[in-house]
Amino acid sequence: MPQDAFALNHLTKELNFLLKDSKVNKIVQLNNDEVVLTLYTGKRTEKLSINVNPASPRISVVEEDKVSLLTAPNFCMLLRKHLLGATLKNISLVGFDRIVKIEFLTSNELLNPEERTLYVELMGRYSNVILTKNGKILGGNRGINNFDNGVRPLICGNPYVFPPTNNKLLPTDKEIVSLLSNKTCENLEEFLFKNVQGLALATCKEIIYRYNEKYGKINLPKDSENLFYFINDFIYNSNTNACIVKEDNQIKDVLCLDYKTIAGEREFFSSLYIAENYYYTNKERQKNFTNIKDRLLNVLSTAIKKIKKKISLISSKKKDALSAEENRLKGELILSNIYKIKPNDESVICQNYYDDNKEIVIALDKTLSASDNANKYYKKYNKQKRTLLAIEPQLQQAQNELNYYNSVVEEVNSSESLIDLNNVSKELEEYGLIKEEKTKKKKEVFIGYREYVIDGSIVRVGKNNIENDKLLSTAKGNDLWLHVKDYHSSHVIILNNGKVTEKVLLTACEICAYYSNCKESGKVQVDYTYKKHVKKPKGAKPGFVTYTEQKTLSVFPKKHTELIKIE
Image (cartoon, rainbow, N blue to C red):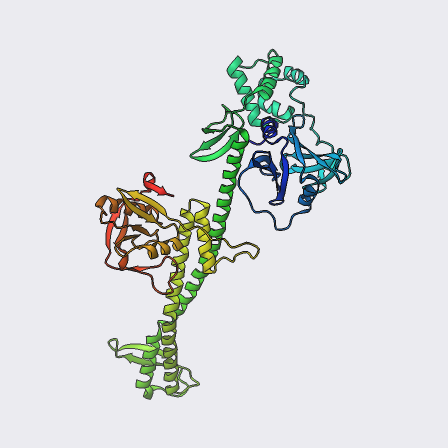
């Protein structure tokens, strides 16, 4: 659910208790939407994130350090000027709207105390952060913003005014009773959503559900006043019971209390701000994961299209060059039938003594003599032979490149974390398919394997081509090496401690089959051999090896999650 006023009311109370009287030590701006204030409470340091991204505006306490913009924007500099060293005195909700008021106490050049107020408006596409002094605007994150067609222009030096309420009532306004008295029982959730400030539709549904659960089906106008008091009791007296909602192990929502109208598995937290930090951190990771994955797949898709076009052109040349023997034959037959050819002849009929003396018609250039026509066919034959010799390695190289790109596509699709994707990204950077941003500091990407323990034997599984190569280079000669036959898969190493049982080998083969691009095709054939029989040709692409002395097992793919020790 969005951060409506009901959730913000609980959140601001928690944040005020946590951060009251803390000192502002640092202010950074991570992007156009998010500002982070580092606060020292006297016992520990907390990071207060204010994010006005229209898709998910929020205020929360965060734990992770993020990279800030290289150059601090004007608004960040304004906050530093007025709030660095200031004391946070209070965090509260304005009225019952999605506006959080953060009050600071600072001092001027003469060390006289002064107040600054930060208004955080969490209102979808109108979200903004506004700094004020004595009720007047010092600046805003989005600069001058004509809210609601110019009804509320936000200009530096002007008094700060709250956004229009669109004629919605406060939950405490008794006029709600009279409105309910003139309302039928149908669509009460929509009615509350459209007429009461600060309530999301999900909250309105929960209120009506809980009323019906406690008092029975609502009967208007008889229950108008009782419903009014129930709404206020729910909003202002509900105890926080923060939780996140999961479906199929995917985090779907964060709630300030356990909504009975929202289905899914629950994981409860001691505080709402902790639950929200967990929710938004995982949501951001998932978003980053999806974005990076899509970017890598787009890069690979473009590269695959180019290499397929190149293969098509080379194959076309090869097809044309395959007629070389035909041209050699024509040259030979012209010379053997030179007595038949007269000046200005455009063709000659010869008997092909290589094919039961079948007649063949050979085209001639009437401007050339018979011997010159023969030489013309011989020259074409020699050129085609040279072309074939040059094309074969080109075609093989292009096919290897296509196979490599397809293997990396499989790596991307089987990636389960940002680390996996960053490793693939590093691989493509080293290969030259992705250019690293000049402003980005190069970081070493962690190289790690999936590690299983099967009946005491350690089994390691590479996650991408770079890891596959590293896995091979660190294995010993008597370790067992596994790979799916004729398809791309992770390389798997069974550390040979002299106890590689049939069960260990079979299970490792099932794992190898699972991390392949044919795991959906039923039984999979997996080759295995000693590492000493596996060679990486000089100059070969990442992940490419040759091997001998292999044996093969047919298995059904299985992940064997219960045996994973290192994911």
